[in-house]
Amino acid sequence: MEELRQFCLSPRQEEIIDLLCQGVSKRQIGIRLNIDERQVYRAVSAVKSRAASRGFDPENNLTHPVGLNQTLKGASTLYDGDGNMRLQWVKSTADQEAAKKAIEAAAESMLDGIKPLAPIKSSRKTLDKDLLTLYTLTDFHVGMMATNTEGEDNWDLNIARRVMLCAMEDMANGSPNSETAILNLQGDWLHFDSVLPVTPKHQHVLDASGRFHEIVDLSLKMTIDAINALALKHKKVVVIVCEGNHDISSSIWLKKSLGKVWEANKSIQIDQTNFPYMAYQHGSIMLAFHHGHKTKNKDLPGLFASEPRYRKMWGDCTYSYIHTGHYHHTEQDMAETGGAIVERHPTLAARDSYTVSGGFVSMRAAKAITYHKTLGEVARITVRPREQ
Image (cartoon, rainbow, N blue to C red):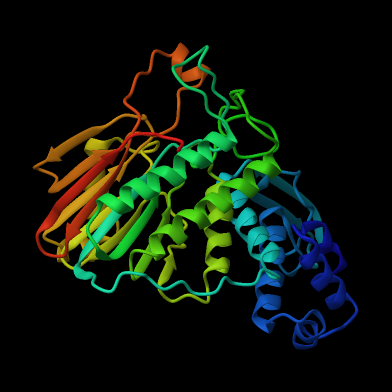
């Protein structure tokens, strides 16, 4: 059991494993650490799962862990005539899915001590229960640095927050009094995904505004501010956090953090789907979401129609609307053969040096779209960036 300590991802997991090594039961560990017993079981399971993915699973004769940031690909074991293990060959490979699971487990452990925020009640007395308003913020790139000497506008942490607050105010004021709202963070909410300002997959160097811990702190505060703004207008708020190509890991800890913050408020629902493709049903309307970095817009209707977890929703709905981002500009397609309207949303963020040098041009904006549960889209408002 002591060997499991090297696979812990947080001080809380280390505490739990240390107590287990001392012979303390899981129930007593929960009492000592003042946490739910289920959290103890989840922590132990997460550590054992990470250990097994790294090649340490003594119950199955795996005792040679692979290197850091690697996962077990396969193992070959040679036994003698008496059944004793003589040799073992272990193969490893980098595994992004295993890394995501490890980050998710770490986020859950770090959030053990967070106290949920008190519920917020809508100030509106009359709300239309048939309506849902979708507020989309895509490619916001919190933590990006841009200057007007390269593009047309400046962009940094403080500007991003002011623009977001003004956009949420403008969209909410211009939209109908819908009973339900969706805050859709359509991917690339953060500009980069680690202490180094580089893209996760290709390691392209990025212009950064602030250190990563500052960006994490501000991005969480900004999201909470946006949820609070919508909760004052709508009775129910659903939060969608899409995985982007810039924030593969951060999208995980963000939705986990928000889930913990709002767990005491039944009127605020944080979608915890750990999948690049997400969906929500409003009456006979299907709203689907994908950042747009993995699948082309023209192929998304077929994907959502055939994906097992959404197949029934697709069949039950009269209208399907698929929302994407990624390219920073507006693009709407009526895929008649696919049976869905696919819309790519623009961004409010300024252009950085990479975007400018690549010749990418887009009109900065954000959209709030209102849907009737049987009639489909009935209203929309487009807002432009402002700071005051």
